[in-house]
Length: 275
Picture (cartoon, rainbow, N blue to C red):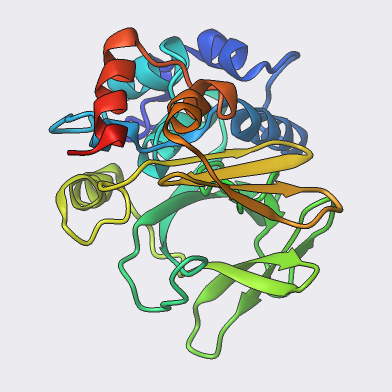
């Protein structure tokens, strides 16, 4: 196990219970797939701490485990990766972290590299293992190779641009949507701290001025940005609708499976109500 990823400190049994995983776990592709599917189904993307007046979002493993595993919360991508990296390290996987520049909502290829995910090595091959991108992200690992495809109810591919960036794309019926571009430059937990500070405090952060919740389940994906709820279902047109204040306040638990304490619900109610 790596001291960097702290696999010896993760409560593996509690994590497996939280994501509903049953059976043995070993460092192989079947386990990686099953963990990926279970994780994204159970643990939502959640930026609520930034809206609840928190001055920091701790990234130490104990804090992340307490929040995502024991208290039933979600978290943003950095927290997901801290937790998943510890789990994979504990099981015996070999992997590195990388950072990507999100394109799906901005179309900007040159924005800050705020998204993080993992590349896992198995039997001489690399697999992109991304449990933290949210509603548009892959439901299981995708082989890291040029023109690789992941086919299923929701399909994805990887392409490489002339400048060398790899791009993960969501293959929609109306055409591919670029999710993010990335290189394989290795990122470390110390890099996460800088990204975390930007996401929480910077005026141009996309995560600190409105509620963003996302959940990726087998047949349906949900994204709540502000009070606009997007629902993506297999074989159906994408729907977008505006939630009223009561619906938005209920959405974390009812749609995204996020457990909030009563004090946080009251604070969120005041935030949603505005000045």
